[in-house]
Amino acid sequence: MKCRRCNREAQVYLKSYNISLCKECFLELFKRKVLSTINKFSMFSFKDKILVAVSGGKDSLCLWDVLVDLGFNTEGLHINLEIENHSSSLEEIAKKFASKNNLKLRVINIKDVLGVDIKKASRISKREPCRICGMVKRYVINKEAEYFDCVVTGHNLDDESSNLLGNILQWKKGYLGRQAPLLEEYGSLRKKAKPLCFISELEILYYVSLKNIDYFPYVCPLSKGASSLFYKNIINQIEYRMPGTKLRFYKGFIEDKEVYIKKESKLELIPCQRCGYLTVNKICNFCKLKEKVEASSK
Ligand code: SF4
Ligand code: ZN
Image (tube, rainbow, N blue to C red; front, side, top):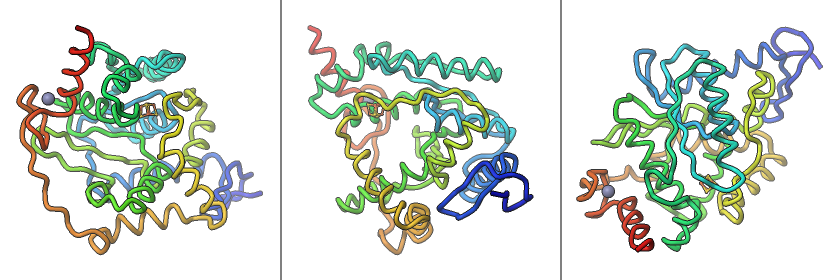
């Protein structure tokens, strides 16, 4: 199989685009795609300080690598969630990547901010681990990003399209209104961007393997039964039968969002009475959780 662009031996075949590419052309196209997403949504510029949320998995390491390659000014943030047989390896890999590439990485341990690990927090609050985990991560990242112009996460096309499917099936209009490649800064809530949102998990896998990036390949043990995995499985089955569907589905929604969802009236957010984080209630969810954790240890 020959590369469609240069006729060298191809190393990558992307069924959704029906295209074969050699290593060099694939990596070049990959970088260009990320840059065009950043520019299209005016996510950030070369002058900005960018905080990359780095888990140690393939998506966030791929994102950090591309942004560095493109010449952006980045720093990493890793949150150790203290999940048994999981979190310490992730931290180690994130640290290795940073030191190998001479990059700055901040590491925050969940027990230092919350007092307990995610599993225990989920038990105390009687809510699914992923819900608690997502909320805590958003809170910590936002706090750590105080002196940055933008926070970026490694959410990819598979994450975004499956999320979209789930939100449509349940008609979660609020989530649909906020589902976007870029969330602008709002008060103390930092600007958040997803530069990989049009890039599939498969393309990311090719990228990390062609660039020899070491990543943690196992799924989180707490994700068992999570609805996000169920929707991902469904959208992958559709993609298998009809290649290119994921991209058409997500892109179509983003480009014509106003046609499907009425422009959301801005949520009335007020500062949390405990910590100042913007929230819809008097006390934010993080402070409420912390209160429960403290009460449980008495
Ligand atoms: Fe957190 Fe759920 Fe992701 Fe595990 S799968 S890291 S619990 S959000
Ligand atoms: Zn608070």
